[in-house]
Structures are given as structure tokens and as C-alpha cells.
Image 1 (cartoon, helix red, strand yellow):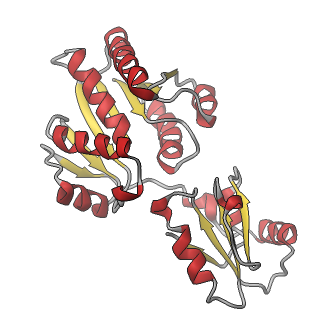
Image 2 (image 1 turned 180 degrees about the vertical axis):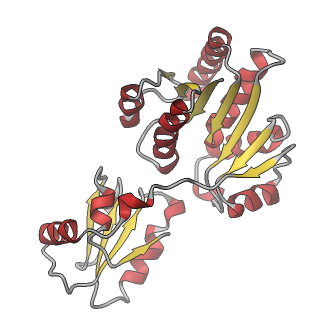
Length: 266
């Protein structure tokens, strides 16, 4: 079997990281894969290529870029002749569908991947809102739509998705990576200038309306006796009280979590 994954980009977001983790596991099961990134190479492209998974970078930015990327993706499907096209996130789903329809094949199957739940579209660009509306309109075209949570599936059905099949496939997480580690706890706390008795609260997310940093920071104003650490791109630019520290984008999240007492999810 050959699967072509079509994803918005290969930055260090949750969906992108999950794909970079999943693809080698599928390869080990004998599934050939190619990853198409609609916005060119990102930090995770080299990780995939190191795992012998080819990456094709397109440039779908802007109207002209989007049209060119759709035709390039159609050519990729025509050349590779995959058994499955798997879209990831809204842009990936829509472009996968368009190229799948242009590169006609009775044998190839099309799947979508829903990676979020209750997303306030009013907080995002007009272009993204149009892409989501396009996904709602085209949601009956894939052979199946996969969601990584029941909440995500429900929200999208309420928004107007009408898939032929809707499947919930939870994320697979290697929990051993996040096991308590006394040595890492001491090392990270030393870096942060905290002793072992200090209460450390961790929040892991890039700055994005859906992650609700504003809500967390408002709550932080009312919290005493704890240090809150924000981990994720954009966090260093946030205005925050003295007991909230921003660590920015990090590649050692599992190590940082070992130092914490409480994890907050926005």
C-alpha cells in the first residue's frame, strides 16, 4: 500500500508532530508513504526524510500559489499512483480532495483528518473561514472522515459536515516519554531558579486564539504561590505577571514536563 499524506505544513504543531511520529510506524508495517507539505519544508521535514519518508514541498500561499499547488499535487498523484490520499487539517483535506478529483482513479481512496474541536472561526482569517466552508461543502466526498476525538467529530457535524463515514481514531501517545524523572526535574528546576518545593504549572501551546492564552493569563493574575511556565512559539511576546515565565518554542517538552506539578490545557 502507498499512502500520500497532504498536510498544511511541517512546523512543530500537534498534528504535524503526530504525522512525523505516525509515519515511521506505518512504514514499519510495510506501508509506503509520501508526505506533501502545502507550505514547503518545515522543521519536521528533515525528521521525516531521516526516516526514509519522502517529502514534497509545495507553495500554496496566495491565489496563484494555491492553483499551482493543486496542479502540482495532481501531478504527484498521477506519478506515484498511491492507493490512499490522506488529508490533514482543513487545507490539507481540501487540497487532497481537489487533486484527487483532478487525478481521476477508481482504485484510489480519499480520507480526511479532523485535528481540532471547538474552534471559533471568527478569531481567524477570512481565507481560513472560506477553506472551512469549502470543507463543509465537500465533506461527503471522502471515503471516510477521521477525527482524533469525539468532541471534534461532534463539533464538525454540528457545523455542517456530512461525511459518508465518520470514524474516531484517538491519538496514540508513547506515555513512557512522560514518566516522572527525578534527575530531569531537578535539572529543569535549577534552570528556572526553582527549588523542589515550589509549585510549577506548565502550559504547552503556541500562541493562537484556540489555545486561550488570554484566559490563562487572566486566571494567573488570581493565582498566588505558584510559578506558571508557558511553552510554545510566540509566548515570549506575551505581557505577563512576574510569576509567569515564557520559554518559547522548545524541542525538549517531555523533559520540561518532568519538572512540573500541574499541566494546564487551554
